[in-house]
Length: 173
Image 1: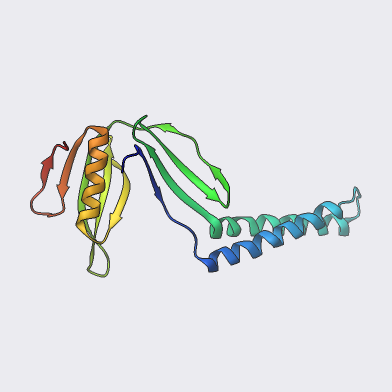
Image 2: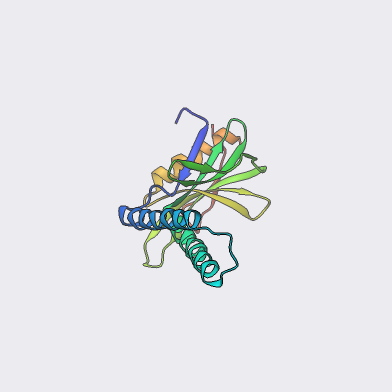
């Protein structure tokens, strides 16, 4: 972890979701082709309705294609104290860098899941009760290491809340 840049990503979509998205995108392209090539400047109701239905189908398919193909990433540039919420669809990336709010502290804590198990999370806290969830792990050591790394890079305190009955504050070296 020598770099001061940190990327938190949803990862890649499963193959079955990419297949569904590609079918939807293919249908959108075909419908758009038929819409453009079949366009007529006419007052004939039948032709207008046909073009309208093609456009309507494109508009209905686009959100589901995006839902099956879009990935959300959270990027932090700790050195320059900026962050970006980036949405990716294939090679296309959308998002702008914003100034990182003043981080008050980093916490590492144990979060219960619905099945009775636990995960360990590392969060960046700002504005009293707002936070970025930056890391999640089934075991404590990786979450603690990530929290420690970020706290050290941002020069803020680290709250160890992995034992819910014994919170401790640490100042990273």
